[in-house]
Length: 74
Image (cartoon, rainbow, N blue to C red; front, side, top):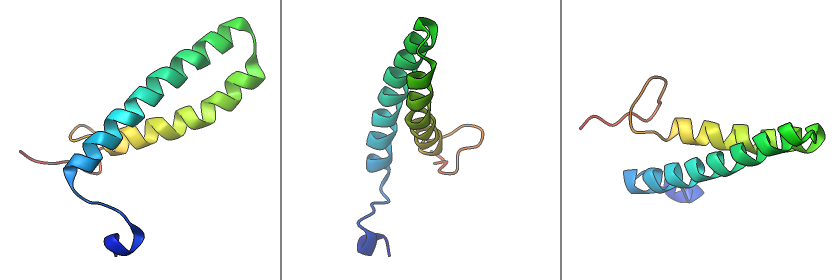
């Protein structure tokens, strides 16, 4: 099923996805805070949606920690 959908289950892919989503969370978070303090609340609200999505992707692809669905015991 994973090959049919083009999904990969190896941990290397999860690590790369985790790093990319973390970078996006940091960048979008900084943009959100700047826009919020400038007073552009409408644009900050639009930035909050992809920020939340990237945060959830980062949270779900962590290797360990509370709430991680993909815990890997080493």
